[in-house]
Image (cartoon, rainbow, N blue to C red; front, side, top):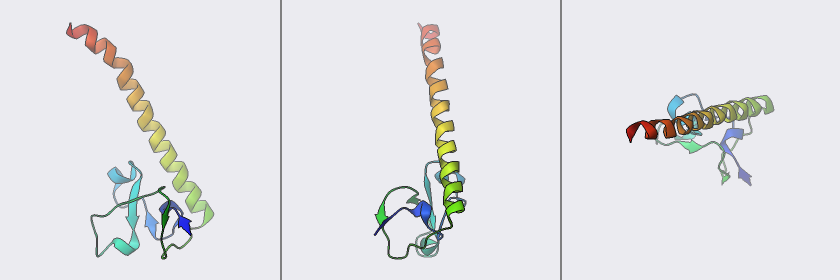
Length: 91
C-alpha cells in the first residue's frame, strides 16, 4: 500500500520548524535510531508501520504546509520583482 507520511499518526512536522517549512518531518520510529533523518511529508512511499492519523489532523497538516509553501512562493516573487531595480542601480 502506498502512503504519505503526512497522513500518519507517527509523523510530526513540529520537531524542527526549518525542515517542516521545507516539507519534511520526523517519524516517531526514527527518533532514537536516526535522530537526523527527516521524511518528506508528501512523497508516496511504502511503509508497513503506517498508522492512519485522524482526518482533521491530516487536513490541518496539509493546510499548514500549503500556506507555508504559498508564503515562500510569495517571498520569492517579491524578491524577483525587486531584482531588476537593483540591477539598474548597479550599472
